[in-house]
Length: 376
Image 1 (tube, rainbow, N blue to C red):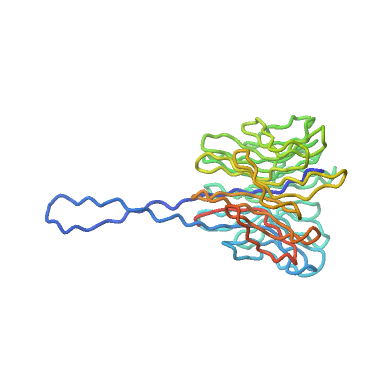
Image 2 (tube, rainbow, N blue to C red; image 1 turned 45 degrees about the vertical axis):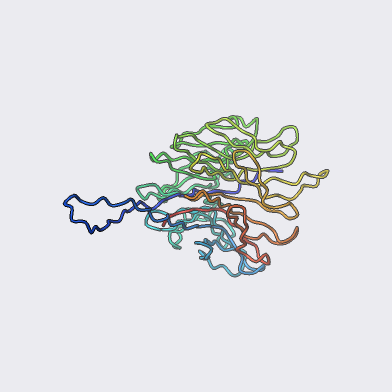
């Protein structure tokens, strides 16, 4: 099975500051009374999710985001071959909502696009296929978008990012390459991850690449998401490729050292990663029902906590987790899709601590591709 990255965006875990309240005293002493400590107000948790849904099973997909379960359509495509897809979301400290994705033009060519509070900005002109898969905002308000463009010369995809709309290519178009996601650490370092030529899992720190599966691609693989902990350790999720079974292996790397989450007997992909306040490592993606002969089994929505797997679905119909986030209370949110039947359309689904909620009906197609948790 060929690897196909399902893309992740950054979960912003913000906590409201403590604000003490003064007390009063009925004593006559001239010593100022000591105000007893007060309990800080609980942090406000807003859950933002992003994806694509159909209005009906005969209409195109529309880019959509949800705030606490309430949808906002970023496009309103109703007829024809045009569709719009949203993959990444971020929220800044002023509650501005940014979404990354693409819109298909009249020629059905994907135009890399991002939206700020619902207003679109096209990053490419529609002459060549391009998409935006992730987005992040730094402390100065600069907008970073990652994805890929297509070389008009070689027709290969080019790993590309945009800073405030200005494009920078990280590869030259001699072989296919994509960027899948982005995160920015507390010092302002910009980390991006993706896949370069010959299926090499790669991440970049401030534009400098680190190859995780060998620059020649002899081991094969791809990178899907990235996270940085408080000590500066770099975690990357993705896949490696089993030369023995020809299946993808769900894999993550910590500071370049790989850990396989599956054994290669069936295809599996690690799509996203989140770190909680205790240092636990959560990774989400999918495993697959073992194949029977050449018949590939259905995907199973799966996440791993410190390497131990939990299946969210049973494999009777296809499902996957596309992204994961953890709030300040260590509640775990996973987003992706399930299916109403083995042949039915995908259902936009999220799980809170393992409990599913369905945001589409199952009669129309839908998927949640990214998540952001914010106090704004």
